[in-house]
Length: 148
Image 1: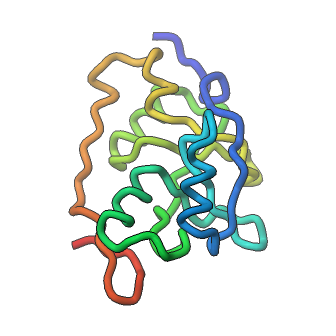
Image 2 (image 1 turned 90 degrees about the vertical axis):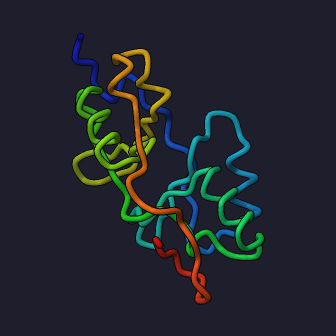
């Protein structure tokens, strides 16, 4: 297999959103073409979380939709660099049980996303099998995510 860099398969950066973004606004943004996830940044432009469609579906199904994305975004954020070989990015996703990585350059500037679907054509089937190792996400009464 040829070592293709992540920069060849990553998406363009989707607009980042602040942690106080509502679940409705996040869902609306995720409906835009080529938006597999939203990267959540604080006021200093530091990446602090990621929100996907499946995060929103899980939270709405369990608790309803009246909350900000800060209460359920995935964190810590798993990152990779544009020069990382696709094979290594796939291993990182598989080992962490996630389906996307945020691509940042050396000074941690957000450059885009690499997803399981974007790297699939470059890998053998066994490298793409991702199994969640944790328990389902649930929210406690203070609206902070916990793993049961």
